Length: 560
Image 1 (cartoon, rainbow, N blue to C red):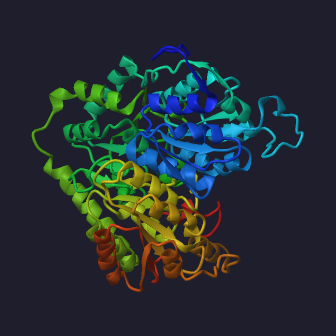
Image 2: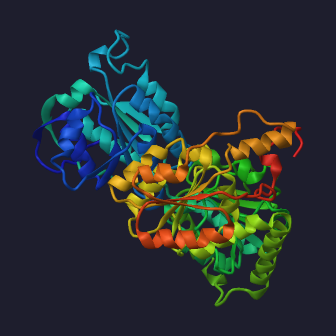
Image 3: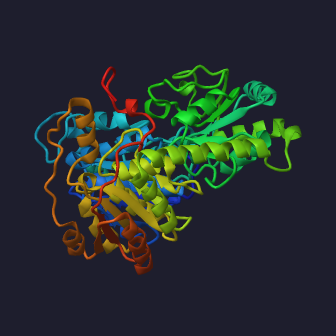
């Protein structure tokens, strides 16, 4: 990659070259933990008051914070680790970001350059540390000289933002960080979003123009691209209901008459989608859970807009595949359909959708009224602009489908990797990115204790989050799955601490509620306090109907 010099060379350490490169890319917040091998970088950060460093209590937490920051802001999230166990502690979080296409940049130190691979017993030595990072990143390199650092940093940022946004990692040996040389810091590289092929766009327009009952399925790629305005314009132009994936929540306001929510797997919605004649799928991979093990029946014509060419035809054959940035692709499709513009929403399809959504809610309410009541309670208590961060717990499973979202980047969910312990640190990152927004975590007792120590970070850095901690004394999802599959349970029950006392030990506010009715007022009180608050909810959250298909979780041939 060719450098674009910003200034004449300056003598600096490798640590300073990293820090100055972060500034050149507009970074104002980083998450990490100092260690013996990356102290040169931390010393350089002392001279950069424009870069806020948030020190985590575990590297997994630091990388989850960077991920939450990236998802809530649309910017790159930065995680700093030292070598060996610290770098490997971040791998789970990077895997989560990789699975959900989130741009997280991990900058890890290493043992001295000449010792790598010799297994001589250096402190923090890891056999093939770079190889450990490779499966959870789209790009990872080692900087072997001080001069190499700026261009490698630049390349990492470009790769994360030019195509499908996925994590990158740069490994820098400690002696390179400590060494000095004359270094030129280049300007940030040009971000190039893939442009769709004109011929495929035309074919897509032809399919959509001829459709009489089109439907749209919007995934996380549309949110990453910032395509919400273009999506809404196209939906209104086509009079097409918009379903979303879990990661696509907020791509269209859920109170819009054409918003169908993430409800495509509920039986009435399956029938509705199958009765349409064309689907426009935007930024979605048709993954196992979103398609019910690929049993979801799609309309006969499928236009698939996707930034990653490898995803076209991977799980469902496309009538037309459009490879390109979602926003630009939708702009071009909109332009091609401009003569079909409507002055108002078509009453019949909006009415159809209203009936469909009401039927889904009523069927869920009939099977598990308290599940729907929980969702309705949360929606009434939370301000419209709230960022909701989920961990893996039954309450979050209810909300990922049925809770209304109104803006992009207000739903932060560990979807593909399904990583326990994501919620609290990711919420801290989201709050760092959007201090103007309320940030609420939905987690269970099991997942909370994976990273409960990061409450100290929220308090120390005045990043107030509200933690809704649903305590059922178990890994509740697993306990239910075991009961359904085998009629008994094993290793699912937990002996928990006093969560209210634990939260207060971190100098957070805390209270316990024992009914759904008490939850809304508790949230209101927490919002008014402006402090990090843990609300322990000790009441049953029903399992039934929380997901439209039990087959998603059951092994092939198992009862559901």
